[in-house]
Each structure stands twice: as structure tokens, then as C-alpha cells.
Length: 264
Image (cartoon, rainbow, N blue to C red; front, side):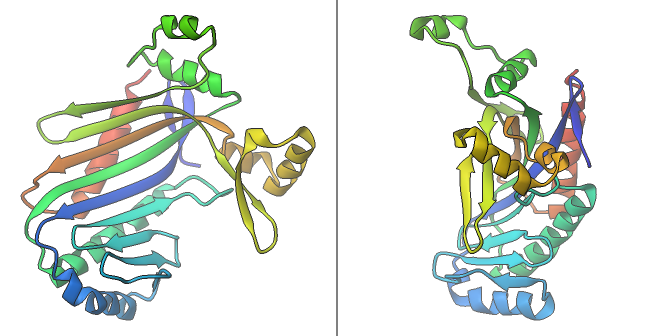
């Protein structure tokens, strides 16, 4: 299992998203079908999602790894997320994601004649498992990047269980939107033909026993923590001169890893 470590705490990569925004993409209205035909004909791992394409967007999903792809007159987006109850995203899956992005980005850009880009962004979600929501909050504040005044808890005569903080940073090469949050995961119960998503803390003790049976092993519970500290990093550039998907994604993830690795 691939992990990142912060202050000795192991975290997992839960989700990746890559987005490009552009101007003058309205040839989408003329060439959406032709673009999708090219993708489906030459790359059979992709299939059309229900209810698309339409004038607003075209949406496809990879039957190989579940990566979703949406393109429209304004932007295109790729999202890869660890499956419910499954393993965190691995190095191999990250590499496949880059390949998918590079391949379809070229097809869409050529088909729509894209030249004026307004934003390129690479976003990653990292989860750090905890037994209690309040513990994840304490750990996040212990990183030393922000603090929450105890006066707030005193005012309401309460204890602080969860918090979310968002910051925007600008450097010479790119900008960063960082979000620190205490979260409770959604669990999925397989009820035959129905999949029910609920918060784990709402289950009774007896129900929780059945949930553990459905999850099967402690390994899967660890990969899908009930409570977690969520680190959401979005690295982006506005008005990029050109688009190189592979270079931007790989450099962004490397940059994430290097910066996170210094948080001791």
C-alpha cells in the first residue's frame, strides 16, 4: 500500500482530479459526437455515461479503472478515486491516470481546436486515519499551520470536534489551494440491488457488527477510515501559455510529495 507520512502518521491517496479550462470551446457543439466516436473507436476501455452527451457536456468512464472524463465548451476534467471498500490509489494507478489524461487531452484539444487556455489544475486528496473525529482535528492543528482560538469553544461552552480551514497561496510558478478538514467517511452497504451510503457513526452497535462483516477484514477498514484528517491540495496555473498534461501532473504530484515530506 502506497502511503505518505506526516509527523510519523501514514496517509493514503484517496482521489486525483485534473482540469483544464479554456475559451472559445464552442466547437464542442459541432464536434462532440465526432470526438466521442474517435475515443470509443480507437480506445475501447472508454464507454459513454448515461444521459450524455448533451449540449452541456459529454461524459465517459473507463471500464479499466473507473476514471471519469467530462468535457464541455468550457473545460475538461479527469477524476480517479479509490473504490469504496477498496485499496488506496497506487503508483501504478497514478501512472495509468497520467497516460489516460495525456491521451484524451490531445484528442479533445485537436478536435475542438483549443488554443486559449485559462486554467490548468491538478488536485489530490490525502486521508489520515483516526479513531475519533476530535483526534483528527487535534492532529491537524498540531501541524502548526493554523490555530483555532479556544475562546470559540468557551463562547459556546462546548468542545471542538471538527474544523475546516482553506488557504490560497501564490508562488512564482503556480498557485495552491490547500484545505485541512476533519471528516467522517461515507460507508457503503451492499443490499443486493441497492447500494446505501450512510455515515458510520449513525449505525447502532449491533448494526456496526454487521458492517464489519461486510467490510470483511481490518485491512479494508484501515484503507477506508471511519474518521480522518483530509488534506486537499490543488495546484494550478492561470492563463498558461501551453498545456503539457504529463509534465504538469507529474511535477504537481512530485511537488506535493516533497512539501508534505517536510512536515515533521
